[in-house]
Amino acid sequence: MPRRSLLKGMGLGALSLPAGVALASCSDPAGSGTAGGAPAGDAKVVLASVPTTTNEYFTLWQAGGSEAAEALGLTYRMQSYNGSSATQIEQLRSASTAGVGQVVTFPINNDAVRQMGQSLSGQDIKLVTAFAATAWMVPAETIYGNDYVTLFTPREVLGQKAMSEAVFEAIGGSGNVLYLQGAPTNRTSLLRESGFDQAVAAYPGIKVLDRQNGNENGQDTRPVVQAWMSKYDNIDAIISHNSSSALGAVSVLEEAGNTHIKVGGTDEIAVMLDKLISGPNVVACQSIFGIWLGGYGVVRNYDAMNGVPHDPVEEMIFQDSLVIDTPDAAKEYKRITNQGSTGFDWKAMSRHLNPDAWDSQVAIAPIDPVPFFEQDLKAPKPADYSFPDALQKSLDAGKVQSIGAEYQQHVRKNPYAAAIKLTSTGKTVFGISYDA
Image 1: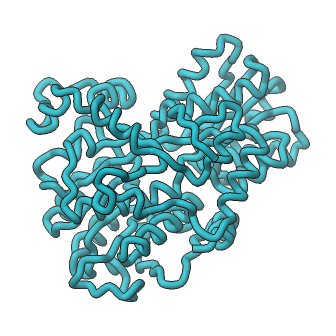
Image 2: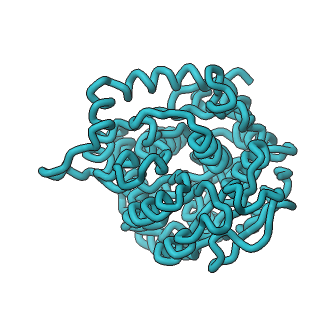
């Protein structure tokens, strides 16, 4: 997919689909059209199940996913479940009849994953989820067979902390700050806010005046920020759960002619990068490598479908992210995005195709579920809970650490290397630098 189409879709807030990639209807489990010519009986269809196709982030997913599927000889379709977990479960109930062999999804209801996973496992369909994490529920549970391949999540706490710190540095390390929260039922929102709190704790000169829910969109954020502007006359920065809310805040500041208040948010959407380049308000944006995640989930499922074995600790994975905090880094990020392809080598990521020399291209690390659930999700272990035997055995054997060390040897190239070098740290949130 040409990056020009990608950016156009991002700027308009609508999904831009390339030729040969179908967008399924809401009722059809995988759409009625074909893309790439794979017959239904071959189970070569990749279904990306997303809450909406009008969010710019899923345009990134579609760009990576469709390119990865094409590279691996698969058919790619994206389908919206319109923010309804009941609709999503119903759509996936008969996915196999449409030739779906794997599903990559962003579940809006974390607690619906168990029902979804059981349904797909009963159809012998591989599953990758992103961002959804329910405390003390793991993909290694026997109800999923071997079909729940991976739960991916950015290191939300670490990433939001790093982005918040970049904003604090932009205001001189001290000042009055406001925080735009995400949806209160969204566990990602809780994790990111925890990262913000950790950043505040590391900067004694930062005072948090207030925090309010912006509903993760610019329209609902505007009245929140307008009320803040009326209430406080000494605001130095606004930090947001995501870039959509951050842009809502920026629109209020621009209307008021306020060039003093600095803004940061998460998601590398094009308008946010443009505002960082032009200034003066936006000073930091966290990229969670949406293009990569949209494609790497396809690769991960593809490997599992081809019999690549994996340890139970590999079924929950942290992914790296990047804080873009200089205009030059934002310009370079956009320049790379405007090239003719995503720049990722999807075949090189595959452990099936490259058993010894695979390259994830974005750093990944196994999640130790105990601190993740207890500290990040703030959910104490239930008294009667125990991990599946295979997972517990791997945890006891130190596999999180040993496989994590192995993963570090398999991240070599990243198409955004030049942009990474132009950030203030020259490194990703995981501390990785690349040769440009």
